[in-house]
Amino acid sequence: MKQVIKDEIDKLYCLFKTPPKLNVKNTKQHIHAFADNPTNYKAKYSVTGLRAAINSIITIGKCSWCGASSEKVQSGLKTELDKKEYLQSALCKKCQDETFKEVE
Image (cartoon, rainbow, N blue to C red; front, side):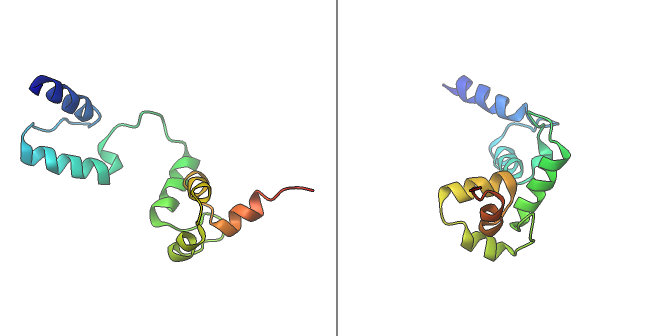
């Protein structure tokens, strides 16, 4: 069982640019750093400039089109579909509705 856990930890750490030493304190620190700082791991897929820009807007919580504040964006995203669309496009609910309105 211990070897299985070690193998899983090694799989996780293979994503780091420099693998950390394996002990409890370091493991906790690196898991925290891994979750909070994406520059610590290698991307599985290359990130395009557009995706990087959208990700940076999502990080601060604003709308990529109208620049609405984080509070306004979050209060407008009521359904799961709206939230999923925000994570793809960084558009607030108002901009989503304007962009994806049905053509008659």
